[in-house]
Image (cartoon, rainbow, N blue to C red; front, side, top):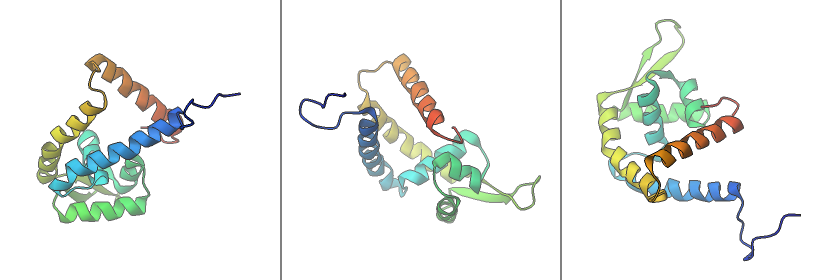
Length: 149
């Protein structure tokens, strides 16, 4: 039998991760919105920076959304000049998407603000502890995901 928390508030890891996700999403929204970005767009642009050229289907997997939602986001980001699409030379039907200089610039504008939010979460954590936490979180995502990271 599991004892309830003394003040009857939920205290499980999944609950706390969910709360963190909610609060973090709001903080990130507040820091990327002045640049005209949404949090999913910032995430997508970051994925392109990290992985280079991707198809819409690959992007959808990386940002954990449907291909239809990713496609709508891609259209919006392309209209703002943050990404560009081009045919995959190896597969005629696949369109590759990559970051533009404008996309890189908008990321560089938002990155320090996002880093500030990350630092607020764990103000007394060393770089080594942050690296360990990052590895543990990546492991948790891989363990619960069919596709992995």
